[in-house]
Length: 408
Ligand code: ZN
Image (tube, rainbow, N blue to C red):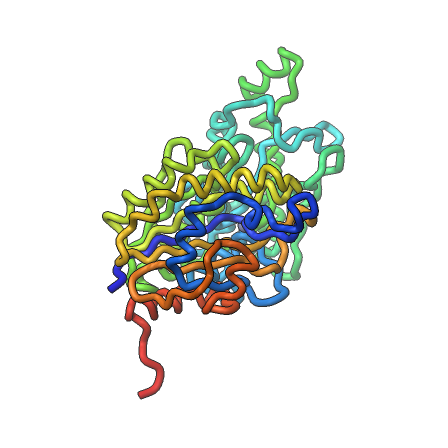
């Protein structure tokens, strides 16, 4: 009987036919002997995380695949990203993600990333812990210019707009309440006061004074966006009875793991980018299976290549994924292996789409079907048909013999 589960999510893996690839998708055109062998031994199908025609964000798609209904349980992007930075959130916290950037004296955003700065930890430390009108600000650095900002205190709301203009050489947006509640007004007010205070601290920060002496742009502003109110989600183990671990490079995916109470495993070399160490991640996931019932393994870069329209690079990254998956073929049949994606990111669109993605289940006593390769159109003829994200854990429970009986 199946007693362990390894779930691989290749972000943005699905695509559309590309003329230069002979009207095949990057996945169909890629040489993937290992994935094809796994598909041959598996029950196959397609998955559309939120249902046919619905274009999912990565965060909601992952929640659905883990068995959390985004319509009822989505906490917003801010809390997920912030949880991925290792900030322990409390019920009612307002969490935002942000960038350390540069805003000039006229309030124009001149630099959203300050890529010439390699270490932002001192900036985060300088503004972390500020208290304004009974609200505590927690600021933690993320990867590169990224940061997480948490507002902790009574009477707060996430019904506020972004400060980040999302473009350079545009005026900073004023944070405004998006409803008429006193909580939203108070949150917008206190955040504006934080900006003034933080800007003053950052303006005089020794690291910025050094940069200015060298003729470089200082990082003098925290550009925040994506406010969300944290509410505790039922831990994955409680929901499914499976102890769980997460192996991911990107902050958002670590955040999903953290919010669901999974053990988030830091893997050296796991960057969430093209240069990531896929072999190290696969090793870490296999190690984690020794001490956990369920391991979520996430690879990011196929999505990034799709967003950039780089079909050749996407195909090449998929081939790298395939090589890294060689050890999976030796998994015991008692370990259910699932390979899927959270959504398609067609190179032609340079954006997420609602096109279904392949999904395979390989393990003891699954109904192996006739599908012989891992691809969008090959898996469409598989036994499972079209699943939604919420179907995935239900199917896992069934395969493990753990589904509750409905009726008598
Ligand atoms: Zn995604």
